Length: 118
Image 1 (cartoon, rainbow, N blue to C red):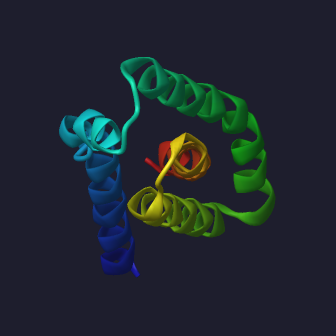
Image 2 (tube, one colour; image 1 turned 30 degrees about the vertical axis):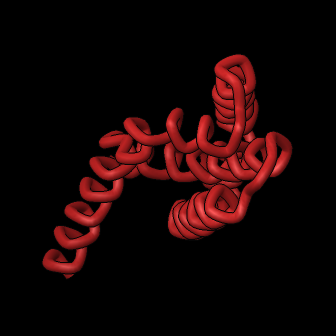
């Protein structure tokens, strides 16, 4: 049992590290510009992403308490993955906005569950 708990804790640290490492950040602006977005539109996307994270933080905490942290981590991971898939197929501002908001909701779900477990 102890070995399983240690493995889970190491997995959570790995998840937390990969979330805060922010791998897409060096390429996200050139990616958006390549899709034809202006700097103003890119800043709107990032602003709406941040507002969505803040708005969903409390409901995701409630969901984590109500359905469990493991399920919340799973939901958040699925939403984040779906958001990056949406980024890959996006072609305009509104599809990028949907992707950003999906990632924001997923990130919020993962954030609360990981914060409470570590």
